[in-house]
Image (tube, rainbow, N blue to C red):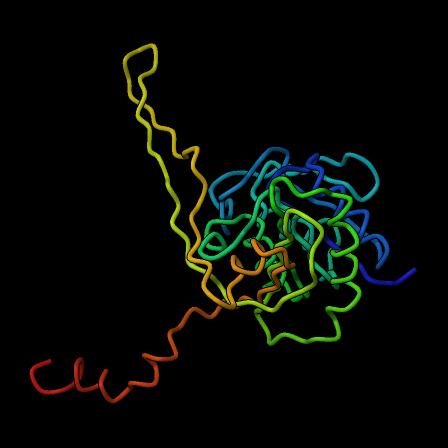
Length: 252
């Protein structure tokens, strides 16, 4: 038995099958502590509950339900439950891909980023909504067996997307672009007041550019994408002289 401490969470809720899968696989690498939302918290990104109380409900050994967001779960897991930095923070396995710009909305990815902010190695796992859990399991185990051999710079995570069928292998990828066919539907309540649903039945359309996560995952590969928190644009930072001339030059 390894002596690692592993904190797991998700945004689908504590009872999601993907979290059970992740707990089972992660337990082969150390002690697993699950702190996850008590309901579905998809698409909350890195939301943090600053203006309300949080409650943590023990539901068995090393298993807790939290009424907050995935990021709240990581914070409470690290600061209250474990009272130390875990070796790994693993998030998922999300029921649905997190490809391209989805990572900006994803609570799964947000929780992993909170893990690195708390000083741990972190990864987010997502899968095709019709993927078979049994076929996904050995690939997650294989990833966890090897990922410590390939270090990332600080404030980086691995974003792992598993395809529908039996994977062809692992593929290192960049991010794709996608168009989401969002629908904002206005309805009326019984008192005649409007309310709105955000969603839509048509899923995203991906560019599937060569070398991208969507191109790999939709072609049957396990798409593995390193993501960083530093969003600064290096191409603009390289143009410091142009910036100074524009903002600090004559007539500024």
